[in-house]
Length: 623
Image (cartoon, rainbow, N blue to C red; front, side, top):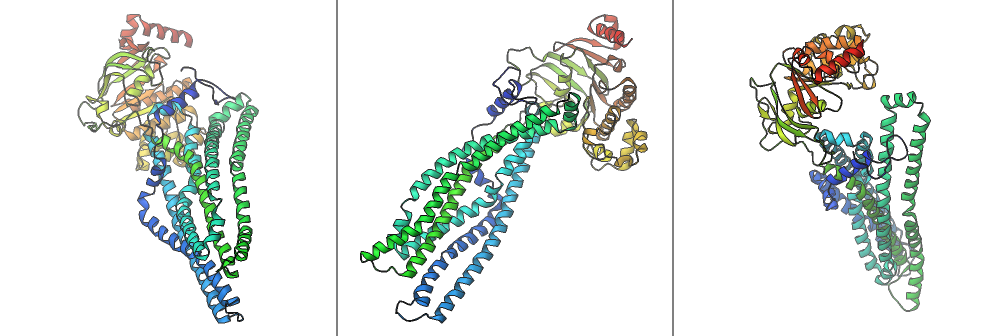
């Protein structure tokens, strides 16, 4: 892969090349996010009914919020200090106090109901967004995962989606409720005294302009913060997996890995502090402004009274300052929401960036299921040319005009030097990649004209690196057939020559295999993988160097299991050890992306070509 700009790498401070290329490829696929606000709003479309009810509750609660200040004015001017000069009017005062309490109780109950609705809707939207992203990632082609760190993908699902949780759960009610409250308070202030209203609102435009600037800064910091979280997640996934721990311990690099994590953690702390402090001066200014307004209102009221203004009573001033708080605090909340939206916009952009990626392998509109014909199990390559997506256009093809025919029920093998293109053949049959030229057919149909799900349903793969879940042996086997009975599990395990071993475990098929199956030996893991494929019962079995990592004894045991698995089905073996394929019906010798020889073991030995040379080398090395 060509070298690129430097960025944080998997084993040290910074590296260039692969990671940078991967990020550029990702950015190239992901278009700029237009109409971000509209896309966020669209997430709430399936929840119209509860949102409408929430809106009604918010409007009613917001309207009620300005009633107590108006009742306060009445309490002062009609109950405590009647304008007619008499003493306190206790019946009227009691009536107004009871009314205020009723308003408070109703507002509180409406608030609790509203919180339940918004929390439910917000979390459902967030959950749907997380599942939507996971589903979309499942549809991405293999090439996407080979160039993107697993930890980065995990970070998008966990940190980015989790980072917008508060926006999804609180924004709708906050924006609507505070907007209604601000409007209602503004009207109430005008009704109380229009001159004092002008005094209270004169500096508002300055706050709005300052908020916009602060929001832009916080959005940039938020993007850097999420990138740092992605790096931390990637480091965790790489170094705290079983494979990562074994690697760091075997090279005595624990302190290096700890230092690498600590460095990124320090960067994360710095960014979090920056993000928190980026708005503090703004909100400090707002707080000073809010604290000063009542005093300014008192001064302005005194000046108006001195200059002969009428209609300003003690009740008016108390009610006005109360309403002014009802205006300014919701307004401050709106400014905070605006900041949160600007900050979360960066996270939503990262989320939609993944959702906008287009899978390279998709079904054509005219795709059909694999036909149930006699040809089932036949695979044909017709003048196939293939390059990996990240290869240079002028580079030599990985497969260069390859043509071959695999008969149903036959056992064929692909052998050759490392890097010759053998494994690529196994990727093209299940259509993990699409060919650049020519075509690959399955059961007589171009694989691009078949539904990918039905194609994969007829293919089983046993690779060199066996993957088992941290679950029981039974659960790992049932991954191929969820409704398999215990008798079916036993039959598959017996055919794979692993049943006796499983039965010897205290927990039998309930034995937990550990992370990636590390509680089992290599041969045991491989035979369980073979049993899992047998449960699937595919028409075509692909063995990608399935025994190359095993010792001689384990290889013989696993080879017997593979021979049993291959019986009665088309078997394609990608082999490094030629001793495992001497009985193949046809052996294809791959070199430099071309089929340079084909024939049986005896025919190829007699030809004295590449195969004969490789076989002689391996025989000599074994002696």
